[in-house]
Length: 380
Ligand SMILES: Cc1ncc(COP(=O)(O)O)c(C=O)c1O
Image 1 (cartoon, protein in one colour):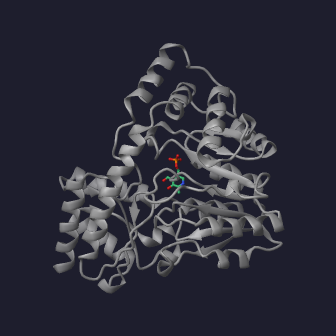
Image 2 (tube, rainbow, N blue to C red):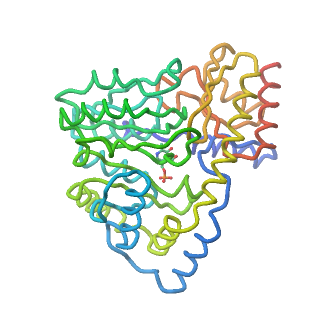
Image 3 (spheres, rainbow, N blue to C red):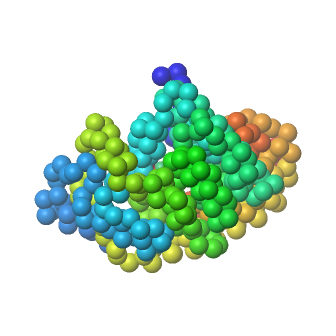
């Protein structure tokens, strides 16, 4: 158990809530969830499903109608042909990470993963006794994954490659040429690729391209996606993976052992989310873009900060080295003295030092106030 890591965002949230309980005002820029409500037509579909009796166990891999809708959506949006047999629906997308790493990685196996990156990848690799091999994301390359570095590290001991784009915490993406080079290396060595595309629709320029579309990836690609971010449904716990059918059977079996299945009425609402009106997604992304530009410009104006303009997701990852603080020390000061909750870059791995992560899934007024408070703490 000592090898198991955690997600600091939840810990900071607890600390922030404790301050609030003492009467302090805290602006929450730590947790990664849209501040919007789930679109009403999706909630209505869940209520209808409940009243219609969708309150029983369902199949471990997910309801056939949702697996079908996910496969259809994948063909339409990713240009990746998928059949319902290739889809596994899980309570949140996180179990896909957990189950896939559990299924594939044995003691001593190497797993390539982005660092800084979502902390659960490294946590799970270590927990299972695998050997985490970080691929460093470089600020000078606009946090685009360094594909040459990754390809150089693929070898006979590599059991899994984990990608995440648009990337948490930097908002970086991987261009199509990079995906092609990774796909070539993966097929050359027969290594599966877990492609975390949970922010695939929260993109501010260009089209999201999935590695699953690259030649040779059919048996190797495992796409992770879900409803949490795209449809503001974090609390519903609803995600899925798309992978070769034999792998899907393995993941479904793990699900039988762990949770039995995902809540049935929420799966029916998810069908409505995928097939229904998408205008709320477009409106949310447009609003996130406005906030991104505002927070990037605001952080750049603070002495000691520099900040890249992210291409996707809803996080900024400013460089704070010129303030003279370590990431953790500054994050703590901003919370304790400024009432601004954010995350230290080191919450995303060792290569996050020198950075903070702010989520801009919060109102413009709060972001504006947070920027003033940050400036106030640093000028003190
Ligand atoms: C990169 C990344 N992958 C996966 C997830 C998990 O999503 P879910 O809430 O659907 O489990 C998150 C959530 O923060 C994330 O940032």
